[in-house]
Image 1: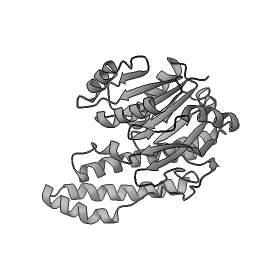
Image 2: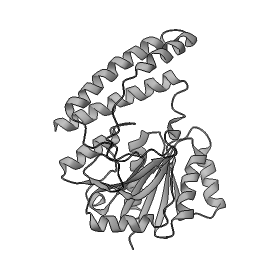
Image 3: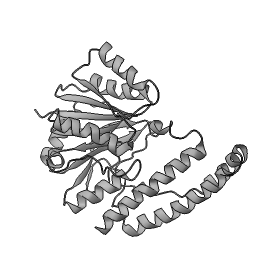
Image 4: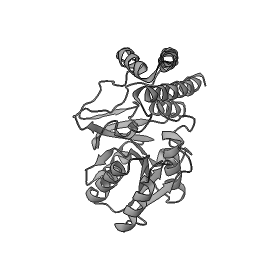
Length: 295
């Protein structure tokens, strides 16, 4: 039977991470897997608590903790775990999964192997269900076009300039102004309204859980494009696969629970700071996507 690694990126969120790990260990009945936790240079004692948890429960060998020297963001952090799983553990499949998710299917691993056997695709995405019963996959029906990405980037740049202007005011006033203007926040459409109890090929998959198959692993050095910190990883990956004539597959045969948005709670000390941080990184990622569309 093939070996599978679950790569879990975490930053300052010990409880969520161990809840995710426990969902894997308690529910999956197959034993041919490893869990690789990548601590993205946490600023609290999360890494130490995870290490103690692994030792206390005698998970050594099954659960591996890697400590990044710096917080390189979503892509770089996941890539650390991906490369370890492929190069050190010789994994045939790598599941990059958010730490605010949980797996409850006992046959999750055997289902992955069966789905890949029937559909020779590079990346598989499960049905991702939030705690309020929203289905997040497929993330988008088609990849973002260059025109749309450029339009989003320009609008986000204007939004960023407005946020910087608001931050010039005293904190109390800036908070009030931000609450007013945030109602007009520019959004990027994520929902493709394609969910059904079936499967879809060549769609943009949600980044909360991506399953990289042997077809992908045998070709690609990284799980995600390493030139972003956060945001747009899904669309960038879709374009990369498209150019290499590789395919994605969404399937409702695999299911996970997503406690949506819990992992980003520690980014930014205020709502305004967090919004500026988010917008700056979205612009950076959109620039990468635009360059990719030009290639």
